[in-house]
Image 1: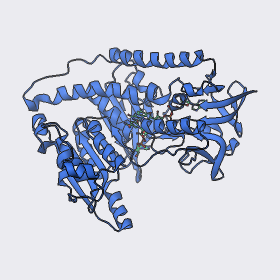
Image 2: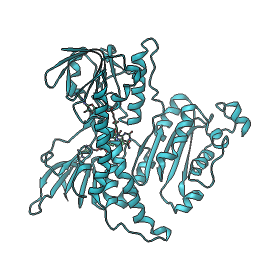
Image 3: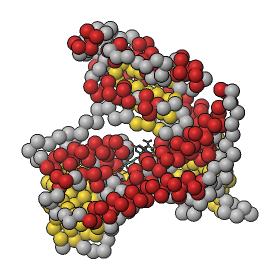
Image 4: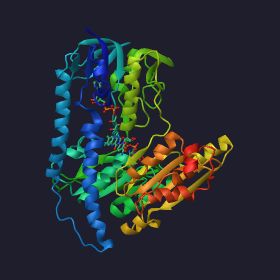
Amino acid sequence: MRHFDLIIIGSGSGNSILTEDYEGLDVALVDGGTFGGTCLNVGCIPTKMYAYPATVARHAREVERLGVEAEVTRVRWREMRDRIFGRIDAISRGGLDYRRSLPHVTVYAEHVRFTGPRTLRTASGEELTAEQIVVAAGSRPVLPEVPGIDLPQVHTSDTVMRIEELPRRVVVVGGGYIGAEFAHVFSSLGSRVTQVNRSHRILRYHDPEIAERFAREAARQWKLEMGWALASVTEAEGEDGAVTATFTDPEDPTLTMQIPADVVLVATGRRPNTDLLDVAAAGLDVREDGLLAVDEQQRALAGGTPAEGVWALGDISSPYQLKHVANAEARTVQHNLMHPGSLRATDHRFVPSAVFTSPQIASVGMTQAEAEQWAVEHGTEITTKVQDYGSTAYGWAMEDHVGLCKLIAEKGTGRLLGAHLIGEEASVLIQPLVQAMSFGLDAHTMARGQYWIHPALSEVVENALLGLEVPEHSPLAPEALVARR
Ligand SMILES: Cc1cc2nc3c(=O)[nH]c(=O)nc-3n(C[C@H](O)[C@H](O)[C@H](O)COP(=O)(O)OP(=O)(O)OC[C@H]3O[C@@H](n4cnc5c(N)ncnc54)[C@H](O)[C@@H]3O)c2cc1C
Ligand SMILES: NC(=O)c1ccc[n+]([C@@H]2O[C@H](COP(=O)([O-])OP(=O)(O)OC[C@H]3O[C@@H](n4cnc5c(N)ncnc54)[C@H](O)[C@@H]3O)[C@@H](O)[C@H]2O)c1
């Protein structure tokens, strides 16, 4: 048995806790998977390194409307893959070597399970205890339990980015972030893609106006099938290496659909790794959705109250499943471990997210339906404005007929409640709106209290702000900015 001051389970966002402030502590960093976790190795970073060239290829395929003839003549998949993972694998290896080089850090490259409060057992049988434990053990893909799910042609986001060739035909199962991003990557690079979703809406947590616009664009780029659940995957007869994915209608299982494919990518959600950690042995609370229960200070809960010396962050305890949220929670834990007398809470008020497809999608705050409900509960009114990219000068330059910026605000104050964008660079355009919401800037002051570069695409945000029915003299507006307007 070995006792530590601090054990961190998970080298993804958990790894970033270890700054020089921790040099005086005896620390164990435990990870049974690839060092650096999901975002670096199999998540945000490699997907975006594929999504960018895919977007470039998509533009080349669609530039004819601007009077330019171009075509994608060849995609060198292996070269792209090796460039991407040449960079990523080196960062992962370098991170592991660096941690191993630190005298105060012991790295355990194995899985652990709880055997009691603040007591763990490694896969090789060693018992570890600590004064403080940080659980940052993440999540993993959920696979439907259907025949053929273990065939080598069936992939998840963990494996599909390392395949040898760009597949001719890809079936993407699932209509969430991961399904959408990979459908974009493979179809733009040249695979024939069919995306199949169980429900009749893709990107179901997005504002319906955005999700519908995306579904329209997706259906133009690849085949989109809604209302089918994966039933089985079988080896295709007479076609070497190919498979047939069979789907049934969840409302009438006698209705089936069969799609031939070279790769089936399953993107049907991710589940927190609480079950693999035996958190019950430590007496920790697990929510109905499988997340480890935490409070705003990131303290793990046991019987509804903070468990002594146990913290959690990221996908294991966060319903957002987003890296910037995991990072923010890691900063909270980093502070709280060192300052037990002045604990901080994580700010989860305005969490943005983006889908890196073509067009991109970005969103923060309430959808229109959520804002309407909020207004009823608070005895107030909302105002909304939808501004097309195509109504701005840069939108004309792009000959854009897709992009839109939808804003939702409180009528009486101009307080921004939600922002939802689809279109070119939506993930970048949204950031000033996140800033305004985070710092309480009202819509009119945001529009008129600063210059907007003409004729940049950001004018779509300016015009959307000006289109909201909000007061010019908001009670929220800071004095200095009112004077400047
Ligand atoms: C394909 C894909 C694309 C994504 N794209 C984006 C994006 O664009 N933007 C965004 O914000 N988010 C994105 N995400 C989500 C983001 O990757 C996660 O929210 C984030 O990485 C979670 O970080 P974490 O530290 O909680 O967990 P992880 O980074 O998963 O770290 C957990 C670590 O714990 C280890 N571990 C688990 N159980 C044990 C155990 N019992 N013993 C020892 N070690 C254990 C694992 O091996 C892993 O390394 C994406 C995810 C995927 C899958
Ligand atoms: N850009 C980003 O920020 C980004 C990118 C990728 C992933 N992520 C994170 O990863 C998480 C997981 O993403 P995801 O796309 O796997 O999950 P998700 O929950 O967003 O979507 C899963 C989809 O699969 C469908 N589905 C479920 N079971 C099915 C079945 N048997 N047959 C057919 N369809 C089925 C669901 O209807 C749903 O549309 C997300 O919640 C997100 O936070 C973020």
